[in-house]
Image 1 (cartoon, rainbow over the protein chains, first blue to last red):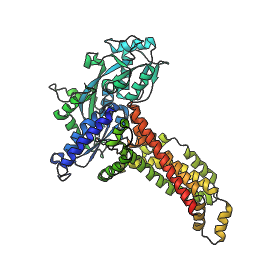
Image 2: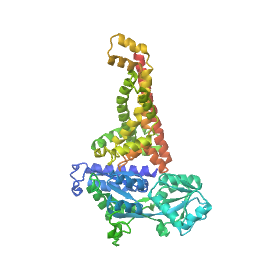
Image 3: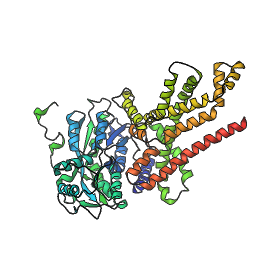
Image 4: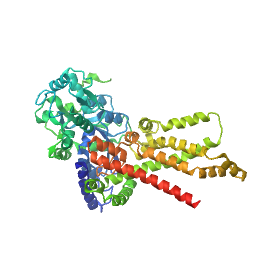
Length: 308
Length: 251
């Protein structure tokens, strides 16, 4: 019910701000909106940024500032990128660097920025039948689960989490299959519920797990890098504008306004301050002393690498 | 968008008044206009789609019912097949049509209520046509003959038949409405399940909201929304049945 409560509080605060701002002429107030006021930005994104309530929490700030509306469509990383590839969205926020790089290389996206990160955790029943608790290697943990043939719930939906999971299995040198390995084809929250009901293991992003922890009996058995776990469980989010050179209907000006805003110190602070059950879910990464040119180009890119 | 914003709060207010007597546990989601705007979108999309379907279906059913032409059986079997057409496939086809890459891409309909109306129209039309056709075919020849003998034109005869078959047609429309409002797969694909950040629905319907709440493990809210959906369908059915009874009494 916490999501609803938050919506209610937001509705109150937005209503209060709107009634104060009501005396100004709409559309002319946003001098810094550079002609985008009144427009709608379509953002396709992964379910984790949406289901944790992050976007609902931070978007009012952007919408107020520019006098615009953000339509956030939560689809899962694979589908979000596909929508963007079809020109059905203006900006895309996902968490699967390999898929993002492919999207950029194919020319569909431009101006990629690192946005924020959190991490993945391996969760399971407290009884821990595969005995993975406290392991500091994610691949060893998966190998132990496979050896014990303990039930493992896989998203199986081409999402960022699913992609990470498959990479982990590959790194572990295991090709998962059999009765104990269940692909659900659902979002993270639902996968957690299914794992909960079956006393199964699953790979979850920390944010979704925390936001649902009070309702499920699963516990974190292998930590990600935020709590000192292995770096392989890092979960970086990127943001990219849809290339108006490919899709001329993409609202590029507004997409860039959004990217500029969400990578600004102000929005990054809002991301850092967002909490569920007193825990921080996302760690801002866009503002940093580190130059990190790698964020602008696909990984492994070299200049003679031009056309596919 | 601006029109939607001015309409929504008014509707939201009127709906939440009726629901405010629910227990405290389920009270909260109703208060901020979240649920009422979802109800509004569900009803708006389904009613517009079913109205359009009816305007198309009844003439098709009349034409098919009243005339003989080669391929009539084929038409009937196409209509009957349409009744069982999987809704997610309809969603997919509408997505292809309205996506920026599709033939209607320039209209920018993806993730809008209009796209949802399109898919529900496609879903509702076959059952409405088929059940209307059955109702019309069921009207005895004597009624048609009588109308014709009394000097009725083809239009007069059609009107008489529609009047005789009106309960069947009402049933057809209800069946179409039931299919439209309880649909989740296709509206999720083409609508995108969008609310604005203050929690007012843009393309979120009761069914897609239930899907979302279940995905997040918020089973209580999902159950409340499910109860609202069932209640809504029952209400609409009751109203139509009631209208039918009133019509019978006036006769």
